[in-house]
Length: 290
Image 1 (tube, rainbow, N blue to C red):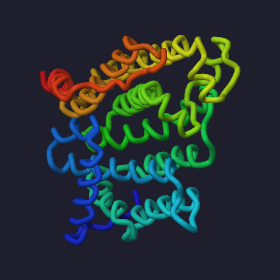
Image 2 (image 1 turned 45 degrees about the vertical axis):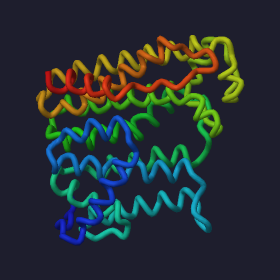
Image 3 (image 1 turned 135 degrees about the horizontal axis):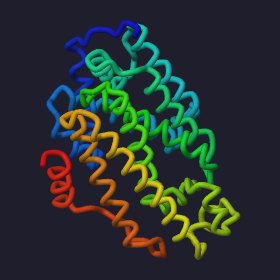
Image 4 (image 1 turned 60 degrees about the vertical axis):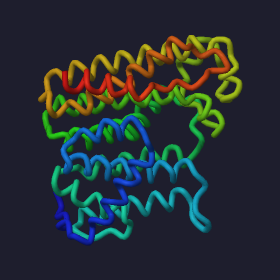
C-alpha cells in the first residue's frame, strides 16, 4: 500500500466533522456503530460521512459552475492523494487518513463507491438488467462492506463474502423500501428481467408503481434479498464473532425491515415502514451480544 500521512492533531477537527455528519443522519447505521470501541467507531463514522458526501453529489443538483462528474472526479483525486502520502483538501477526505492508516483500508474500495455514485450521476437508472444492478450494489454497498469488515477487525476471506452478500441484501432492502422516493427522482431500480417476467414491459417509474403486478415483482426481489441475508449469515458463522457483531446487528435490523415490507405489501398507498427504536435496540442486543 502507498504511504499514508500520519494523523496530525490538526485533523481532529476533520474527524469531529465526520462524526457530526454521521450523527446527523440518525440512521440504523449510526445506532449500530456507536457500540464499537472508539477508534473503530470513529473510523466507521469517517467512512459513512464520505459515503453520504458522494451520495449527495449523485442525488442533488451540482454546485453552480460544476457538474456531478467533475465533483466526483475531485473525490477520486482526494482518494489518490491520501494513498500517495499527501494531504487532501477536503475535510471529510482528511478524516479518512487515520482509518486508512490504522485499518489498512483499500483504495480500490473507496474508488468503487465513487464509481457507483457515478452510475447514478450519469443517468437516472431505470429498470437495469440484473447484471447492472448487481454491479451497482457491489459498488455502493459491497465496497462499503469491505471497508467495514476491515475496521471491524478481520481480513478473513469469508469476511469479504459477508460484505458482498450483506451489502447486496441491504441495498435490495433499500430499493424495496424506497420505491416511491426513487420514482419521484425518476429512478427505478427493480430489475428489468423480473419486471418482464411478470408482464411489465415499461421502465417508466410511475407506470411500474401503478401496475397490478408490482407486488409480485417486489416479492421476488424480497426473496432474493432474504437469500442474500442467509448467505451472509453463513459466512459470518465462519468469522470471528466479535468482529462480526456490527454486521450481525445491521443485518438483523434490515432483515426485520424487509419482513415488515413483505407483511405490508406493495399495494398503494404503501405507508413507510420504520422500526421503533426499542425494536432496533432489541435486535441489536440479540444479534450482537446474546
